[in-house]
Image 1 (cartoon, rainbow, N blue to C red):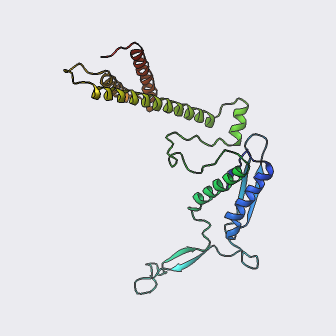
Image 2 (cartoon, helix red, strand yellow):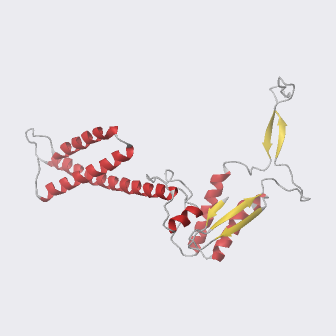
Image 3 (spheres, rainbow, N blue to C red):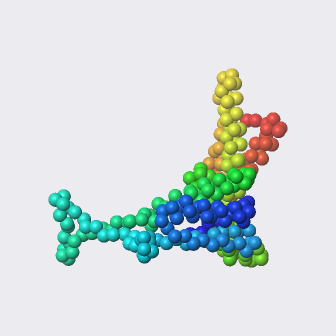
Length: 256
Protein backbone atom coordinates (compact mmCIF):
# COMPACT_ATOMS: atom_id res chain seq x y z
CA UNK A 1 0.00 0.00 0.00
CA UNK A 2 1.08 3.60 -0.63
CA UNK A 3 0.52 6.73 1.44
CA UNK A 4 1.37 10.38 0.87
CA UNK A 5 3.43 11.91 3.68
CA UNK A 6 2.49 15.34 5.08
CA UNK A 7 5.02 17.81 3.65
CA UNK A 8 4.50 19.97 6.75
CA UNK A 9 6.40 17.42 8.87
CA UNK A 10 10.15 17.01 9.07
CA UNK A 11 11.79 13.85 7.76
CA UNK A 12 12.27 12.54 11.30
CA UNK A 13 8.59 13.14 12.07
CA UNK A 14 7.56 11.43 8.84
CA UNK A 15 9.61 8.35 9.73
CA UNK A 16 8.13 8.22 13.24
CA UNK A 17 4.65 8.61 11.74
CA UNK A 18 5.11 5.65 9.40
CA UNK A 19 6.65 3.50 12.15
CA UNK A 20 3.81 4.22 14.57
CA UNK A 21 1.20 3.55 11.90
CA UNK A 22 2.74 0.24 10.85
CA UNK A 23 3.27 -0.87 14.44
CA UNK A 24 -0.27 -0.06 15.60
CA UNK A 25 -2.14 -1.31 12.53
CA UNK A 26 -0.11 -4.28 11.29
CA UNK A 27 2.65 -5.50 13.61
CA UNK A 28 0.20 -5.54 16.52
CA UNK A 29 -1.89 -8.05 14.54
CA UNK A 30 1.06 -10.33 13.85
CA UNK A 31 1.98 -9.06 10.39
CA UNK A 32 5.52 -8.46 9.14
CA UNK A 33 6.01 -5.00 7.64
CA UNK A 34 8.61 -3.54 5.31
CA UNK A 35 8.31 0.12 4.37
CA UNK A 36 10.32 2.55 2.26
CA UNK A 37 10.10 6.33 2.06
CA UNK A 38 10.63 8.00 -1.31
CA UNK A 39 11.30 11.71 -1.78
CA UNK A 40 12.96 13.19 -4.85
CA UNK A 41 12.39 16.81 -3.75
CA UNK A 42 9.44 16.96 -6.13
CA UNK A 43 6.98 17.92 -3.41
CA UNK A 44 5.53 14.42 -3.30
CA UNK A 45 7.09 12.51 -0.37
CA UNK A 46 5.38 9.16 0.10
CA UNK A 47 5.87 5.73 1.58
CA UNK A 48 5.43 2.22 0.23
CA UNK A 49 4.32 -0.40 2.75
CA UNK A 50 4.61 -4.13 2.07
CA UNK A 51 2.81 -6.62 4.30
CA UNK A 52 2.83 -10.37 4.77
CA UNK A 53 -0.59 -11.87 4.14
CA UNK A 54 0.28 -15.24 5.71
CA UNK A 55 1.18 -15.63 9.41
CA UNK A 56 4.29 -17.27 10.85
CA UNK A 57 4.17 -19.94 13.54
CA UNK A 58 6.36 -20.10 16.64
CA UNK A 59 9.11 -21.85 14.63
CA UNK A 60 9.19 -19.12 12.00
CA UNK A 61 7.52 -21.27 9.36
CA UNK A 62 4.62 -20.10 7.22
CA UNK A 63 1.28 -20.93 8.81
CA UNK A 64 -2.10 -21.31 7.15
CA UNK A 65 -4.09 -18.13 6.51
CA UNK A 66 -7.35 -20.05 6.09
CA UNK A 67 -8.85 -23.45 6.68
CA UNK A 68 -11.60 -25.55 5.16
CA UNK A 69 -14.72 -26.49 7.10
CA UNK A 70 -17.56 -28.79 6.11
CA UNK A 71 -21.07 -27.41 5.67
CA UNK A 72 -23.58 -29.10 7.97
CA UNK A 73 -27.29 -29.67 7.36
CA UNK A 74 -30.09 -29.32 9.93
CA UNK A 75 -29.32 -32.81 11.24
CA UNK A 76 -25.67 -32.05 11.84
CA UNK A 77 -24.58 -34.18 8.90
CA UNK A 78 -22.13 -33.17 6.20
CA UNK A 79 -23.75 -32.19 2.90
CA UNK A 80 -22.77 -34.41 -0.01
CA UNK A 81 -22.60 -32.85 -3.49
CA UNK A 82 -23.68 -34.63 -6.73
CA UNK A 83 -19.98 -35.18 -7.44
CA UNK A 84 -19.72 -37.28 -4.30
CA UNK A 85 -17.61 -34.73 -2.45
CA UNK A 86 -18.75 -32.90 0.65
CA UNK A 87 -19.70 -29.23 0.53
CA UNK A 88 -17.18 -26.99 2.28
CA UNK A 89 -16.42 -23.33 2.88
CA UNK A 90 -13.22 -21.43 3.62
CA UNK A 91 -12.65 -19.84 7.02
CA UNK A 92 -10.22 -16.92 7.23
CA UNK A 93 -7.84 -17.36 10.16
CA UNK A 94 -6.31 -13.87 10.19
CA UNK A 95 -8.82 -11.33 8.86
CA UNK A 96 -5.96 -9.59 7.06
CA UNK A 97 -7.58 -9.98 3.63
CA UNK A 98 -10.91 -8.49 4.69
CA UNK A 99 -11.88 -5.73 2.23
CA UNK A 100 -13.27 -3.71 5.14
CA UNK A 101 -9.70 -3.19 6.33
CA UNK A 102 -9.12 -0.65 3.56
CA UNK A 103 -11.44 1.90 5.16
CA UNK A 104 -10.16 1.16 8.66
CA UNK A 105 -6.53 1.57 7.61
CA UNK A 106 -7.26 4.79 5.70
CA UNK A 107 -9.00 6.25 8.75
CA UNK A 108 -6.13 5.20 10.99
CA UNK A 109 -3.63 6.89 8.66
CA UNK A 110 -5.65 10.12 8.78
CA UNK A 111 -6.00 9.98 12.58
CA UNK A 112 -2.32 9.32 13.27
CA UNK A 113 -1.17 11.87 10.66
CA UNK A 114 -3.45 14.52 12.16
CA UNK A 115 -2.07 13.79 15.63
CA UNK A 116 1.46 14.43 14.34
CA UNK A 117 0.35 17.61 12.55
CA UNK A 118 -1.29 18.87 15.73
CA UNK A 119 1.81 18.17 17.82
CA UNK A 120 3.87 20.03 15.22
CA UNK A 121 1.58 23.04 15.62
CA UNK A 122 0.28 22.80 12.07
CA UNK A 123 -3.32 23.71 11.14
CA UNK A 124 -3.52 21.31 8.17
CA UNK A 125 -5.55 18.12 8.55
CA UNK A 126 -6.08 14.95 6.51
CA UNK A 127 -9.56 13.58 5.84
CA UNK A 128 -9.86 10.04 4.48
CA UNK A 129 -13.51 10.46 3.50
CA UNK A 130 -14.77 11.14 -0.01
CA UNK A 131 -16.25 14.49 -1.05
CA UNK A 132 -19.73 12.96 -0.96
CA UNK A 133 -19.23 11.65 2.58
CA UNK A 134 -18.00 15.08 3.68
CA UNK A 135 -20.99 16.83 2.10
CA UNK A 136 -18.82 18.60 -0.48
CA UNK A 137 -20.75 19.03 -3.72
CA UNK A 138 -17.70 19.10 -5.99
CA UNK A 139 -16.04 16.72 -8.41
CA UNK A 140 -12.92 15.01 -7.00
CA UNK A 141 -9.66 15.30 -8.90
CA UNK A 142 -7.68 12.22 -9.89
CA UNK A 143 -4.32 11.14 -8.50
CA UNK A 144 -1.58 12.39 -10.81
CA UNK A 145 1.27 10.07 -9.94
CA UNK A 146 4.99 10.78 -10.06
CA UNK A 147 5.46 10.52 -13.83
CA UNK A 148 2.57 12.84 -14.70
CA UNK A 149 3.63 15.39 -12.07
CA UNK A 150 7.18 15.51 -13.43
CA UNK A 151 5.93 15.95 -17.00
CA UNK A 152 3.57 18.74 -15.95
CA UNK A 153 6.42 20.56 -14.17
CA UNK A 154 8.37 20.46 -17.42
CA UNK A 155 5.46 22.08 -19.23
CA UNK A 156 4.26 18.87 -20.86
CA UNK A 157 0.49 18.51 -20.70
CA UNK A 158 -0.69 15.06 -19.62
CA UNK A 159 -4.05 13.34 -19.87
CA UNK A 160 -4.46 13.31 -16.09
CA UNK A 161 -3.35 16.92 -15.86
CA UNK A 162 -5.90 18.01 -18.46
CA UNK A 163 -8.60 16.02 -16.69
CA UNK A 164 -7.81 17.70 -13.37
CA UNK A 165 -7.80 21.14 -14.98
CA UNK A 166 -11.22 20.47 -16.49
CA UNK A 167 -12.49 19.21 -13.13
CA UNK A 168 -11.18 22.32 -11.38
CA UNK A 169 -12.81 24.52 -14.01
CA UNK A 170 -16.12 22.68 -13.55
CA UNK A 171 -15.87 23.08 -9.76
CA UNK A 172 -15.27 26.83 -10.11
CA UNK A 173 -18.32 27.03 -12.35
CA UNK A 174 -20.39 25.08 -9.82
CA UNK A 175 -19.33 27.46 -7.04
CA UNK A 176 -20.19 30.49 -9.17
CA UNK A 177 -23.61 29.09 -10.04
CA UNK A 178 -24.28 28.25 -6.40
CA UNK A 179 -23.30 31.77 -5.34
CA UNK A 180 -25.53 33.36 -7.98
CA UNK A 181 -28.45 31.14 -7.01
CA UNK A 182 -27.94 32.10 -3.37
CA UNK A 183 -28.03 35.80 -4.21
CA UNK A 184 -31.13 35.36 -6.36
CA UNK A 185 -32.90 33.41 -3.61
CA UNK A 186 -32.15 36.15 -1.10
CA UNK A 187 -33.34 38.85 -3.48
CA UNK A 188 -36.53 36.97 -4.40
CA UNK A 189 -37.18 36.26 -0.72
CA UNK A 190 -36.91 39.95 0.08
CA UNK A 191 -39.32 40.75 -2.75
CA UNK A 192 -41.95 38.31 -1.49
CA UNK A 193 -41.48 39.50 2.08
CA UNK A 194 -41.96 43.10 1.00
CA UNK A 195 -45.07 42.14 -0.95
CA UNK A 196 -46.54 40.35 2.08
CA UNK A 197 -45.99 43.41 4.26
CA UNK A 198 -47.31 45.85 1.67
CA UNK A 199 -50.99 46.91 1.75
CA UNK A 200 -53.32 44.97 -0.49
CA UNK A 201 -53.40 46.37 -4.00
CA UNK A 202 -55.41 45.60 -7.10
CA UNK A 203 -54.05 42.90 -9.44
CA UNK A 204 -50.93 43.96 -11.29
CA UNK A 205 -48.78 42.58 -14.03
CA UNK A 206 -46.42 39.73 -13.10
CA UNK A 207 -43.67 40.75 -10.68
CA UNK A 208 -40.03 40.97 -11.68
CA UNK A 209 -39.13 37.92 -9.61
CA UNK A 210 -41.72 35.77 -11.39
CA UNK A 211 -40.64 37.06 -14.78
CA UNK A 212 -36.99 36.28 -14.07
CA UNK A 213 -37.76 32.80 -12.78
CA UNK A 214 -39.91 32.12 -15.84
CA UNK A 215 -37.12 33.38 -18.08
CA UNK A 216 -34.60 31.04 -16.45
CA UNK A 217 -37.04 28.14 -16.74
CA UNK A 218 -37.54 28.78 -20.46
CA UNK A 219 -33.79 29.00 -21.05
CA UNK A 220 -33.23 25.78 -19.13
CA UNK A 221 -35.76 23.92 -21.27
CA UNK A 222 -34.14 25.22 -24.45
CA UNK A 223 -30.71 23.96 -23.38
CA UNK A 224 -31.76 20.38 -22.57
CA UNK A 225 -30.83 19.17 -26.05
CA UNK A 226 -27.19 20.12 -25.49
CA UNK A 227 -24.48 18.39 -23.43
CA UNK A 228 -24.34 18.62 -19.64
CA UNK A 229 -21.18 20.73 -19.69
CA UNK A 230 -22.76 23.16 -22.19
CA UNK A 231 -25.91 23.35 -20.04
CA UNK A 232 -23.85 24.20 -16.95
CA UNK A 233 -21.95 26.91 -18.79
CA UNK A 234 -25.16 28.29 -20.30
CA UNK A 235 -26.89 28.30 -16.91
CA UNK A 236 -23.96 30.16 -15.37
CA UNK A 237 -24.02 32.76 -18.15
CA UNK A 238 -27.77 33.25 -17.79
CA UNK A 239 -27.50 33.65 -14.02
CA UNK A 240 -24.78 36.26 -14.47
CA UNK A 241 -26.99 38.11 -16.95
CA UNK A 242 -29.95 38.03 -14.57
CA UNK A 243 -27.77 39.17 -11.68
CA UNK A 244 -26.53 42.14 -13.71
CA UNK A 245 -30.10 43.00 -14.69
CA UNK A 246 -31.22 42.84 -11.07
CA UNK A 247 -28.34 45.05 -10.01
CA UNK A 248 -29.12 47.61 -12.70
CA UNK A 249 -32.82 47.74 -11.84
CA UNK A 250 -32.11 48.01 -8.13
CA UNK A 251 -29.58 50.82 -8.60
CA UNK A 252 -32.01 52.83 -10.72
CA UNK A 253 -35.09 52.14 -8.63
CA UNK A 254 -36.89 50.40 -11.48
CA UNK A 255 -39.62 47.90 -10.62
CA UNK A 256 -42.65 46.37 -12.31
